[in-house]
Image 1 (cartoon, rainbow, N blue to C red):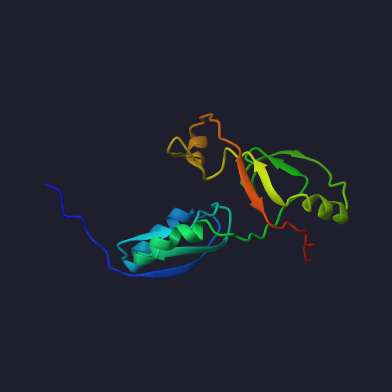
Image 2: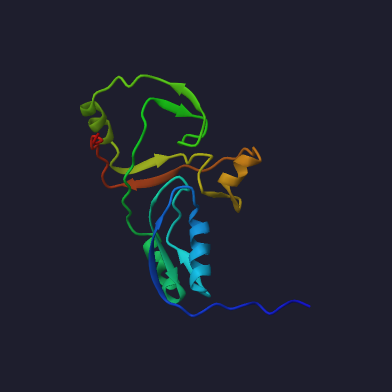
Length: 165
């Protein structure tokens, strides 16, 4: 005989969570849901496990408008290590190639200026996207090959700020 499903509290609102590095957005969502004993919860778009940042978590009635936040413009701040290529295209992978950085800050800023408007991108096979209902990140563990469609992504602005020492 199955137990009756436990129902959480009816709690409504949006919680802004500063997601730490190494935690998936879903793990963060489940922890918040458990802490608040909320019956319904959802986030407004996944952040990569390596990324840190604000993750809006909608609780209860607020989940009804989470789609509007999901579709809204977002801003990202990126710190990149130039001159290294890894087998996963991210900081977690093994370095497979190193090259000297042979361009100036001005040349980099000019190159970044070309990233405006709709940019066509092929998502990494290590992304959090889903393919045939399965998370691509988990698929890499099983070494499955797949084809992901190119995506058109809007870039409003992309600029270079020298890193402060």
